[in-house]
View 1 (cartoon, rainbow, N blue to C red):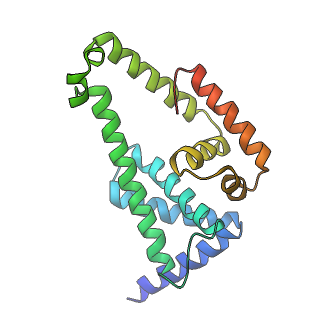
View 2: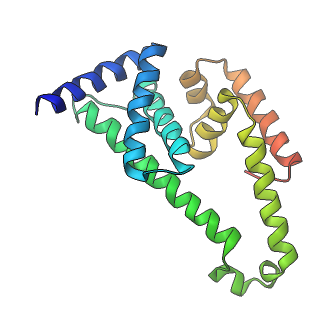
View 3: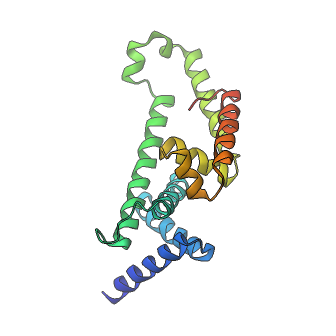
Length: 186
């Protein structure tokens, strides 16, 4: 019981400090989140992605004031976001595997998708997009994540990442063009 209370208190302190911009607290909070994600997913490549997405979601929510401290416990709130992100990442990866490795119901109704050449082209396009995204720096990955996964407005992204609105717009435009050149779409 005492250990749980201490963990809750530490989580709240880290969360508040990270939301204020304390990088050390942010790193420690990210470690906590990674541990929770690892406990949900156990192992594999999804753990890193889910932990990163969960950490970004928590920080963005705190910085954009989408958390009401009077409604729920901050520790429970962080854990809930973390678990949801872990599950979301795992489900998304499973859907990707199904699309690119197994014939699905959509393929039975779409003659073009049963064509082996089409499937190879789809797989190659997905690999190119994945490669482009993987090679991006943290800020650019965060921009894509916040805009196309979290569906934040340009203003919210600028505020969350502490960069000018014009920079958000120009970087996203450049990233979209880069993805298009690699054969991908958003």
